Image (cartoon, rainbow over all chains, first blue to last red; front, side):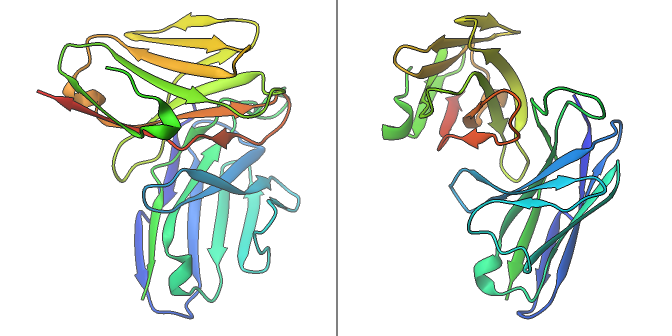
Length: 120
Length: 112
């Protein structure tokens, strides 16, 4: 499966700061990447689908102006949490679909090791 | 040992025993299912998948069973090892759609 790298793995910052998280597909050209959020002892919830060269598709209830997604190349998607507040503290995980360019399906998805975001 | 998924999110087994982790999925239109393993502080790791045209699929030490009639999925781990300790999630998908819906997860603890 695809090898996915996330950076940074852990961020602690003050309330009001904007934080950028990078997701890289190291061995696969990914037209589609996915961003999830996971609160402690809970399951993963899909936030948005990142599409290379076009706008991201956000899930219901996810503020697109707060969680900015950029997928400028086939190997990199970024998630920027703007003006972060303590309630944004969570584990953010990206994934890469298996379909790639010309692929039929984006499953199974392969995940990065996540970014733990702590807002003070 | 056996878990009942949503109602018993923890499962403890002795090393060497077989483990069975259960999952009830919600969408009758789902036709593709994946089991993931998540260790503490890491992202989910793909274990095994199954499509709805099958009712059983085997991997290395793992078997997934699918019962579409009752919308039930299980993961069997043979000869459970301490390294198998993790949270296990089932995920469901409708072919062609991007969305992958995760279950609540079951924490497996292997007792040496």
